[in-house]
Length: 107
Image (cartoon, rainbow, N blue to C red; front, side, top):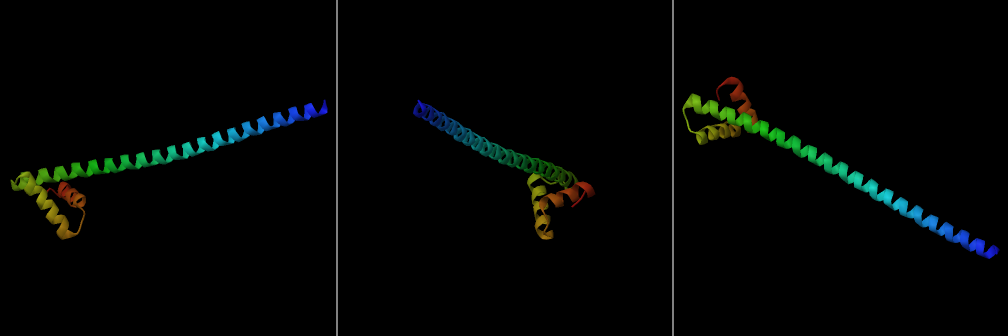
């Protein structure tokens, strides 16, 4: 009888250890998924911030082009080329040159 009890206890312990190992594995997987989710969320937020900055820059460049087109009576491409040339000659970002045009009303 003692041998059957020991066998039963050993079997119960073996099942309990398997369940514990399985639980630990599930926890590890869950933690890994959470970490991946956080990384993906951070990457998505960074992408949104980049797109918002690009949109603001595009609007500013568009406004600057409109100002140049109106004041110089030139076509759209010529206004853009003027901004690009100023950017290259001043060694400044196009966005910065465009901001100055919007603020000053001239290139």
